[in-house]
Image 1 (cartoon, rainbow, N blue to C red):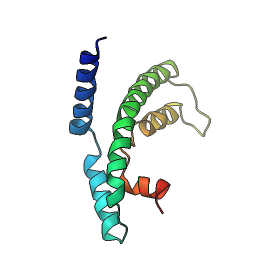
Image 2: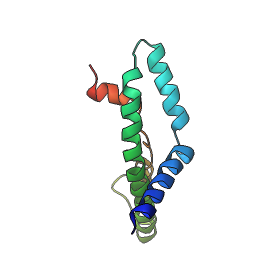
Image 3: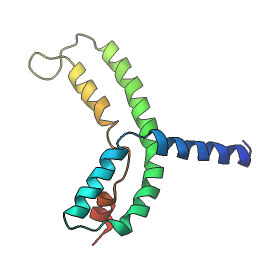
Length: 117
């Protein structure tokens, strides 16, 4: 693939990640709560944006692959009893699929907690 096309795809992916990503509002609210509670996340905003740019495509691929795999596993194990009282494997499969699609962005408070003072 030509470098020009690759650059266009990368720019489109970045724009798409910024525009349609779920959880952006909650990340901003969490950041505002942290700042109002005395913590300063100012120096950690830029690293959080860079890490989020890297994390979004990874989470998108992981989420999509897990959803497809979970659908197949659920279909193949329909009405198979699970490892707990009276349930089926559907609960475990659904929980795994749900957890794979939760954290789409790295918030400044997470960067502060991992790399800050």
